[in-house]
Length: 125
Image (cartoon, rainbow, N blue to C red; front, side, top):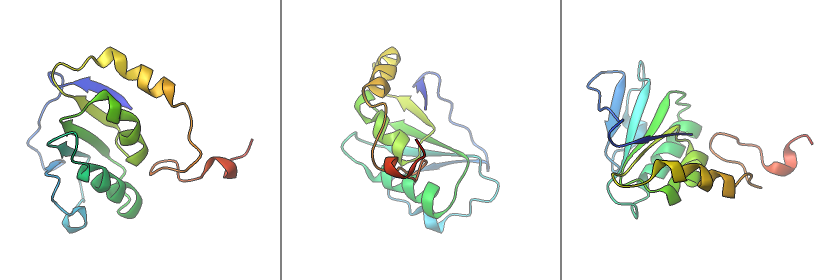
């Protein structure tokens, strides 16, 4: 997962880039030609963007970039990656250099995820 700061994030007005509020149902969208979808976390306690990401990856087969924006904290990064996000835009004031430590703490998972669907026991040794 790529981690960027809020100052590095650019909002793009383009048919290829969509910004979805967390109350939008992704199943209602025409995804033809869309290469990036920015999903918004208005508060870190509001997890509807996780459901949107999972739905886009697993049910709708979206293969473009999913970007987490808004109130994004380091504690959320591992779960974001497991639900299908490619990029996370950290909230202002959050130290991006600490993000890798979060991934190092959780090097593997027994269950499958939105991206890696096979559970650990089903993978070849």
